[in-house]
Length: 223
Image 1 (spheres, rainbow, N blue to C red):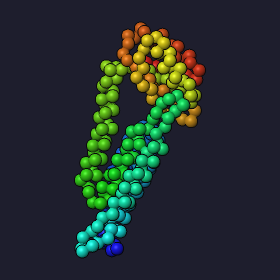
Image 2: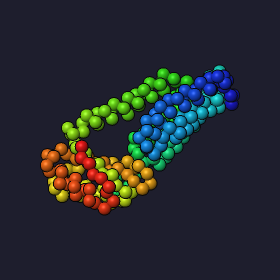
Image 3: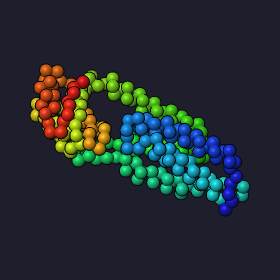
Image 4: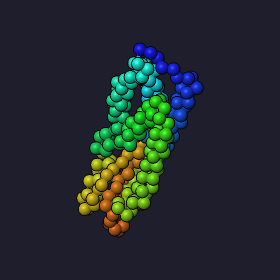
């Protein structure tokens, strides 16, 4: 087995570029207070880049040609799957969060491996496209809100039954609930955001008042 030469400057460039690209995606998750933020994304990206360079360094050379061993890369992909699964949370209220963050961790590891093997164009373009998806899909959600669905937001204590009680109350008056999301403010507080089919405002106003009286709810607002 022969170690392949890789200049120190090239190693620094690849690790720094990975840090920058992974940090950009991590910043988006950080500002939204997701389970994995800047530090986690950077670590995943750097790990992917380093392991890819390690694969290149330790690949045997046979008759002057590199015989690349894909086993390290395959294990990285598998390992990131477990890490991503750890960011997916299933609340006792039946709400699942963290799917997008798990996906960004997976793509960040791939970006790191792309940089590690010198595929800079693919890494940079992937980062651009990921940020476009994260940003523009957020704008699409904002545009559709009120047209395809309406939203109720509950500012509540960290209790486990608020979301289910709120959804049951909406369904009791014939309102179709699409989904509910939880945004954690602190260990003691959260926002519960419930999306439901558009209805006439007079039908919702009495429900908002009832939701505001649920145990643990500090404030209920309707968009």
